[in-house]
Image (cartoon, rainbow, N blue to C red; front, side):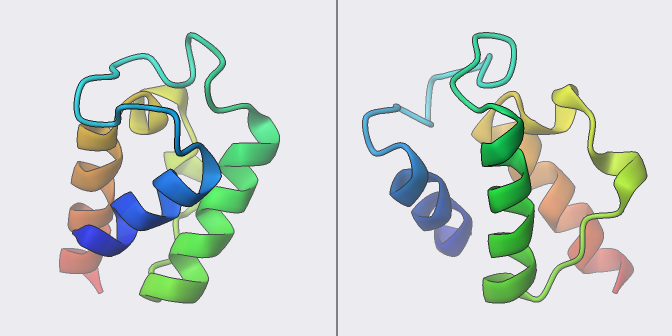
Length: 76
């Protein structure tokens, strides 16, 4: 899922997404970042993230976000 990692790195290139497990909890990603991320995933990957999935647990790590995106891809 290289495109997802590219999107994240464009937003915050200083973050090590492979190891960081508290992106939301530690305020690495704020609410504006989440909105931007959702829009970029929709535009660049053609995956819509429904409102009920906009919970901190889905955005706290690259792994959790990747799992969400893969789940939504399967449902399409």
